[in-house]
Length: 602
Image (tube, rainbow, N blue to C red; front, side, top):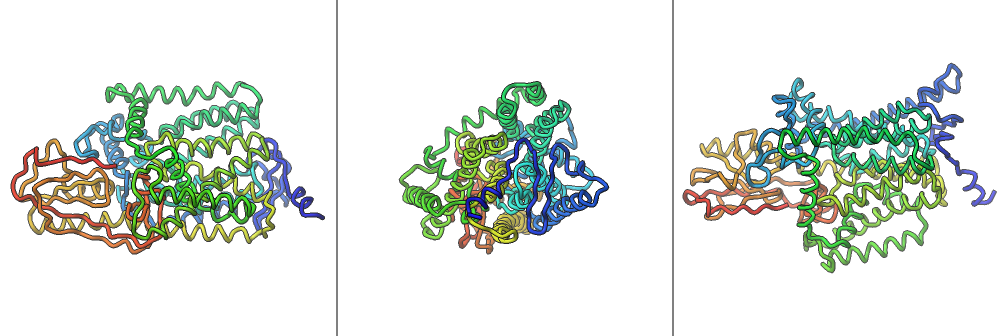
């Protein structure tokens, strides 16, 4: 048999889920029917019993692997925007129908929480439901967020059943992606939103396959819940509309189910408008427009940075390249990436931050590899659509390109949290592409790059955890110094550092109200956001925390900016990481309002 004939024989035509085939090393499943759930295939026959046990075994393995990867991080300190969700959750416990009815100092002065946060409240309600009875400790809340993380991995396994022969591999690729593991160690809304997203897509496809309006209506409700967990969930409406239109070749009764999430979002807008004098949805649009106006990157710069974040967050798209693409394609991608990297490093295109001088060659090589991975991820979506042009390929193409467009041109900054939603789609696309790969690969051999991805992802996640923990330990040390010297502690900077120092009795500087005196200690972190700088002060010391993991997610000095590309054009970097430093100041006398200068930073 010729190589072409063998490749053709391996191809499986999947029309609306007509077959479900699993080939994952020891797991081999071949089904003739697909219009039922996996458990619906259970029958007394020996074949179906083996099938059910095989699928159950795969899911148990995936759950066990997810827990194994995330349990080491259950005591990770709260980080980045975690405090905003925690404060809202604690407010909900006291006032369940007023989640944002308090003030917080986040942008240098006290502001209503309804103006500070740009997230809907359902993730905070989930935190409140756990914290109100189990406590607010890091292990408790991180363990609670294991549930949506497991739901994402199992959701990919469910969704991929009609799209690829290797849904177990697709779920593993999702788990092994750095963007997923880093996001899963937070208590923010990203992973819960993605879990609801996948479930909504699964139910919508099931409703179309079986022509059941009840499934479609349930999906519509989930779209609304997903959108009220994180606003990006609204993108499900145009995504599933396009998918349904392509599959059904016209508008059918499924169209009315989109009115459910639209009604839910409209009710939420009216509710928040009655509470806070402005609707949260309209406030979000105003904020994005304002934030985009401050973005210093050119269009080309934003595009290259988004490619870098895509390749870094969906690392398997890079490490699977020898299995996915021809040598000619790889050479072209490397050339494009090298030119783009040179433009960034040399400052030929406008960026939000200059490329660091230290370790420049090492960082430039990593940036180039990230961009190649991003090109691979987008190429998978485009190539799959060109090859199949069916409803599933349209769904995956719109899923990936829509997420990429939002992260690049619509969001206030490029960040790993915005790239996260595309990871399941790229994982499925990799599995689908392997079916047509001209490179022969053995059943178990393909798991080698997955293992490398998982090891690197865990390494990066540990770097992010060490960074988060450094803020907690620094806050404890600064608090002890203040208690010893009987001084009030004022501080600037936010994220987890603010959460911990505030809980220890520190006071965030409000540039419109706070009046520091010579009897206070003023703390200014160097690697943080929205710092307030005070004139007429002398530095009396500093607190340092070493980051010895040789990788981190937020450090401008090594071009790493997972949570905002303002810090750097890569989501993470492998290099020698500078210490986290907190400068301690003491005023020479009593400060006046004119002596304080608020300098908001991204």
